Amino acid sequence: NPIEKSIPCRLPIHRRLLTVTATGPATHVLPEHTPTKIGEKNYRSPEVLRKGESSGGRWSKPIVRRKTKIVCTIGPSTDTKEMIWKLAEAGMNVARLNMSHGDHASHQKVIDLVKEYNAQSKDNVIAIMLDTKVGGMMSLLVKSKTEDSVKCEVVDGGELKSRRHLNVRGKSATLPSITEKDWDDIKFGVDNQVDFYAVSFVKDAEVIHELKNYLKSCGADIQVIPKIESADSIPNLHSIITASDGAMVARGDLGAELPIEEVPLLQEEIIRTCRSMGKAVIVATNMLESMIVHPTPTRAEVSDIAIAVREGADAVMLSGETAHGKFPLKAVNVMHTVSLRTESSIMGSGTVFSLNQAFKNHVSEMFAYHATSMSNTLGTSIVVFTRTSSMAVLLSHYRPNGTIFAFTDNKRVQQKLALYQGVCPIYMEFSDDAEETFANALVVLKNQGMMKEVSSEMFFFISVFCHMAAIDSHISDCSSVS
Ligand SMILES: Nc1ncnc2c1ncn2[C@@H]1O[C@H](COP(=O)(O)OP(=O)(O)OP(=O)(O)O)[C@@H](O)[C@H]1O
Ligand SMILES: CC(=O)C(=O)O
Image (cartoon, rainbow, N blue to C red; front, side, top):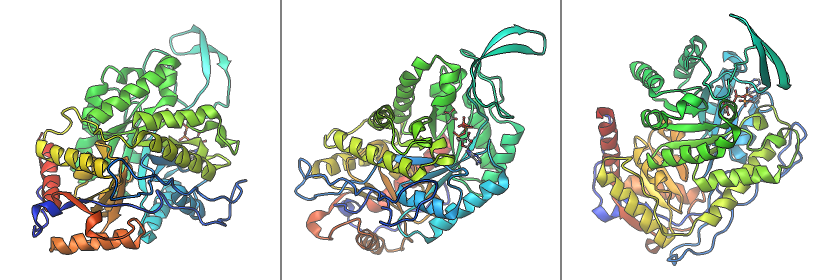
């Protein structure tokens, strides 16, 4: 990206990407007496877990932040200022707008509220995801057919609303991936500078290229996340994910198009594929379905979240639970605590996850790999300075044990990073003087309670601050060339 410029470098080489001892809550903790809506009693989000010193951790006694991010679908239960604020404080990282419901005016209101929240929040940011989607869930058995109609018997009934689509088991729905209505919604997303598109019924990489070309032609910086939900997408998984910025395991439609027993296996495969390619991956649908009407989850739902976290998803998603459920805040709270607890059981090993050729730029890979390895050994967090997000994303995919504090001078980058596992994105103006930028970052970490104290002993300047910014740009250059 020619606009990128590196931060002038006045720091010695060993002092530029650093790890710090982190403290503070993983997400924002609800105030004790938050008034409630729709049947929810007052409650507090739990304190984050305290973790003991890690193996080599004479440097730290970190309080662990939740790494797995939470996507919340916004609907009638949550589309007010009060609820957006509370969701954000309870742990929502990404607000999802399902374009098959509501209209542009109602989605505009939510977008404006999220932006208002972001503008006033000092230490939290919510990304916006726009989902181009049509949906429904009943089973019908075809009894007879004519040229233009079929007679069906209802096997599993339900409420059939208008504008529902049809899945034929074993076959992909013959819907175009991007419909006329979707183009309308996509333009709406461009106008509103949303962060992510979740694209429904992607069958091959062609549609991703089409959308990316369109976004490029409008100069829009929006990441494209295909929803893997159609039978036809499975043979093309690799090329679809290669062309995209990530993927969503859209288990609702996936389980309608393919035998339901395939869903967990596909979930594992999609997560593995995304992770090996350094792309974001979201696990979606039915995660806390019973909490649409009940205040507590089933044990199976808790296990489902734990499995997604263990498999290494960047994010887990709530749909009806937050869109039209009775207990949206409790659902977020359950996701938060289950993720946090599960993460605490898988952290601690010094082993660094390895990317398979995901990034061809070996120098950046090595920085990220070794920064991760060192921070794991020392039990510290990592601070990275990024203008494009790429180095923070790369670090995220190595899954360091500590938090990745990603400082950026670009609000869009900050919002985008909200989706990535383990990344705590922080907006800060960068000074021309790297030393000053560096010092300012430490002040921010300290003032926001993310770091206990600043002492030279507690810091490990593992890698290269200014070079990170330069490499960051270099990766963007490379990817736009390739
Ligand atoms: N913006 C909205 N306005 C009104 N209702 C909404 C909105 N968003 C979601 N809902 C309600 O919440 C439910 C769950 O949301 P979700 O996003 O999972 O949609 P869905 O239609 O059930 O499934 P799919 O994800 O397959 O589109 C919807 O069926 C709808 O009843
Ligand atoms: C999320 C979604 O669209 C699905 O699970 O089908």
